[in-house]
Image (cartoon, helix red, strand yellow):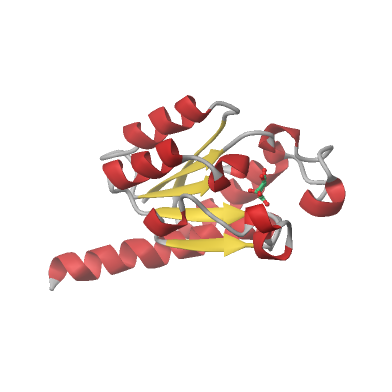
Length: 151
Ligand code: DQA
């Protein structure tokens, strides 16, 4: 199974960015932990970050036929991006929305997700654990697809 992790704006600053909210772990260290767990589960992972909305749209479009699942921390674009929502809907690759912080315990504008309605599910509030739980969720999603196809 192949899983594409996409990280949106400002997530390149993890480790130094508002550590009280996002923790002290860098994105590189998160990637290393995801890869270690993915190896144990026999999952192949690609991991990318961009501050640009259009780049995220490109990567989502290109995932079709190459990845079984997308795990997406869209950062601030979560709450605003019609373009990212449309890309997820267009490609049809099951997408899991993740957040390090519990967005529902924060400012009102973070309670709205523009992409949530086209995602398969959400993991929010577990720090690095959100990234790791998304691997388990990816297994669930692909098992569901196999069951649907064989019935
Ligand atoms: C975030 C939550 C978003 O509201 C915020 O804009 C981010 C990070 C998170 O991982 O908790 O950049 O997606």
